Image 1 (cartoon, rainbow, N blue to C red):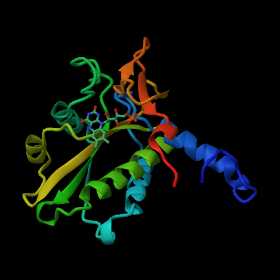
Image 2: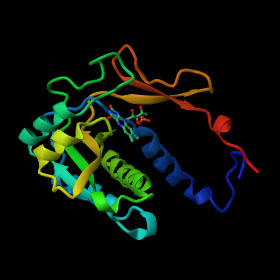
Image 3: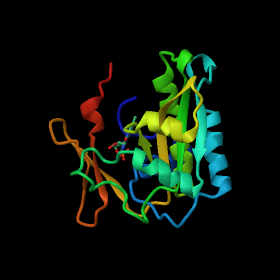
Image 4: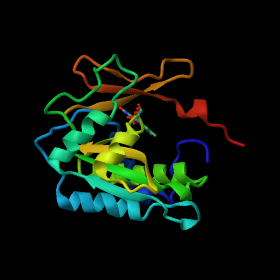
Length: 210
Ligand SMILES: Cc1cc2nc3c(=O)[nH]c(=O)nc-3n(C[C@H](O)[C@H](O)[C@H](O)COP(=O)(O)O)c2cc1C
């Protein structure tokens, strides 16, 4: 459906759609947190409930989740994660007092690696980070992690691998998107307040209708 009109059928939902769009747009990557504010148990539960209802290839549900929120362990995990590769060295790394307060590791069984793992993990992480943001908890999905030492540190069993992780905490910075055209620089950057600006391509430049 092209165009921006709203039919009578969907008009009653328009308010809800605005709320959803606000949630989706606010759920950016956050890389600085208020380290003094833990994520409450109830919010952790909601994050995990969001994972439970995610779709997966053939409904196999092969992924497993490791919640790391003991402060000492979170601090041991932190140096094994790499932040903001697009920014000059160290600029996007949370400073002391800005570290995340929780990580969730997405684990996959080595033997069970399937063609849908990437999609399954993406959907689960999308659900979890959205649920977190609904409670004002920001997140950063993390693939640039030292898997071997992390596996040892966290006591991940031999037959499992860490596929991806996500860091969580109440943001201590803002992030906003800026619409850009193809060919423009897509690298995110920090503005004068050290808030994130994330370029996103215009819808009409990445979409065709048939
Ligand atoms: C699969 C995946 C892996 C990522 N790994 C990292 C990472 O290791 N470190 C990091 O700082 N950000 C990481 N990110 C965050 C991306 O850099 C971020 O999503 C991107 O810059 C766009 O920003 P946005 O999420 O606010 O739209 C990752 C994101 C995804 C989807």
